[in-house]
Length: 157
Ligand SMILES: [Zn+2]
Image: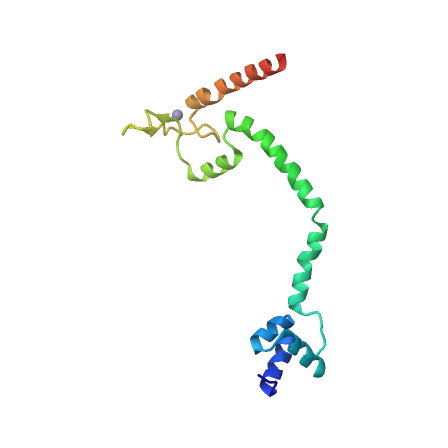
């Protein structure tokens, strides 16, 4: 393989696009050193290309990033702390938003899941809860009481 008008033209073109010399070499069938040497001889200069600039941008963000994970970590920690409590007494907020759009009935199961007549209550839901008013009373009041008792036990220890 040797340099001729057509591959020199391609070299100039690829060089202008800011491709790495190794990449240009692969495309033209030359070694990286051959590409660098030829580019130097025909007076091509390394300029920051559009491709290179987009590579630099994320790097700059990376340099600032040590602050970000710290914030994210704190947010996650809080979420983990609060989630178990929330799930016991209420449906998570995301589920409420999701179910609101679908407008399904009360999700209180009736019968045993293994039996063929198993179904959900299906009555109108109470506010943004997944259950009707009747089943909300069953679902939410009792666990709250249990939790208070549990907390009292923990505190007395
Ligand atoms: Zn119900």
